[in-house]
Image 1: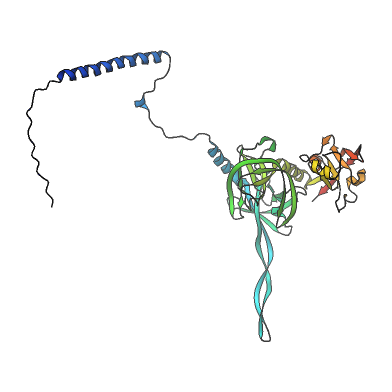
Image 2: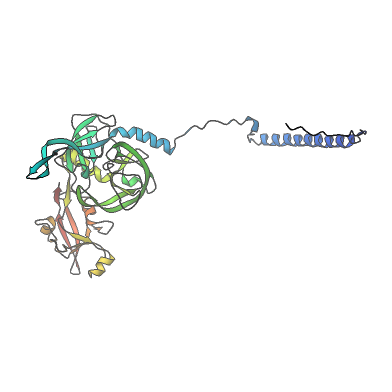
Length: 407
């Protein structure tokens, strides 16, 4: 154990203190200054009060708990809660062959062999749809219900299942209309308009992600408008889609056919495709185009489009220069190793010839951003249109009666 060393402290002789005068002077100065400051404070306080400015007393500040107001987050939560019950999972079932491996002896060899042992009902596809009428009409993508031999079932958020019948597949857009069998009094989603959306605004996607995660929610923004894409897939042919909405909202396989919803709770698009070359680049069909198909199914029981029956190329400066054409807009009627016309088509009956350039339809100019197909889609079958055509350097006018194109 260690011991502390001893210290010898010498006592100092105490002398009378002579600094009381200094201390008194110091206290007088402090108290005097404090009283002067307090008088100055009271004067300022009175002047502020006379001016009607509220005085905040720091000693009375009480930190309150934050109460959320109407925030974007709260809106998203409310919209998802409100709309999810109207979003359904679309599942395709089909009887598929069941094979069993057997073995067959051939002399000294045993050969494996597959033999069919009947069929079994299996899930062969899955996607998303959403209710658009109280009697159970469902809007989805055409490629979700492309198998005409399959049976379709829709699953609600409460896991109730209904058989559903495909009423119509859109011949132009990647859209289809289904009908729930044996049910009624469903809640439809509100349909908005592409005219009301802007780049950068928040949107919500709800869908059956990967065909396994029902009513998955993802949030993003509108990244672009008026896009043109060429969509391909394992179960459907290449398809050109125009006036498509681009979004960075996560869209996965199985989300196809689901709604893209704005913060008003309105559907503005139908989720359709995703880029495999980039990240967070998804595409949705404008709800405005779907409205036409929905109304036709309600009134006609089918979806039909007007058509002219021609093959064409939209001209621009590069194409016109390469083909030595004097205008850099319009639709050049050309087959390029294929027939330029469908036999008996409205265009053929109207007297349009290969090499003609259709410049305008009813006074509306044809450009890359306003294609012939886009203009034609505004009209109904059997309507008569006036065409402005460039032929051999001369402008002529022809009338055409549109035909009807069904699935």
